Length: 164
Length: 103
Image 1 (cartoon, rainbow over the protein chains, first blue to last red):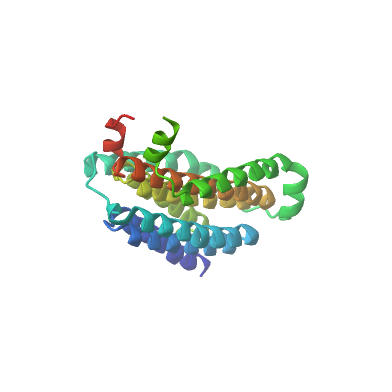
Image 2 (spheres, helix red, strand yellow; image 1 turned 90 degrees about the vertical axis):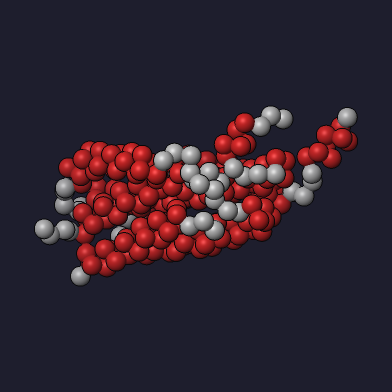
């Protein structure tokens, strides 16, 4: 029964990813991306990583979608994807080869039974992975700077004229 | 052929990675490039949690996945800010056109 649930959720995520990739309208791609986030977070929740599932749902399906829609509203009619430079069959072949190679390398390592162990995220994060917390703080600061860049209304040409 | 839950999750991760790589290869729009990176990173987050579960150290898997989610969000924010500024400066989001422009 669990296998069927995983199968349905992950096939839905892959379908949404494919639709997001081939869709010409980028607004549709954004909505498909939010669906991928939601489905992935359900899978993560089912695997037992509840905190990460909540983070993925709120950040991936919420914040990033809002930012994308805002960016699309700023760029306006340019939000259409032109045709690809690389021929699609070549891209498909490359991706197929990479995926098969990855599966061939990873599959034997995963054929082990699931070991149940410590699942306390707080103790891992605050005791053995403190550096990650500091990196996250720095990244969030960079994100704030990025949001300021996104919301900036100044025209670069005007800035050049003022400095000259 | 009988697939276990582990096999299905592994195939799902590989599928998401494959679609993300494919999108990254064929897309030309700067905003869509950011989206394809998001798909790739979602597959990676899933893989990290899955690896934590399989190895019996889900706390470590969750911790690294949380860091990756934060980094992924910042990549999206900075990438979108860059796209908006590029659109204002050059008037296009087409990556091959941007790479041939000067200034």
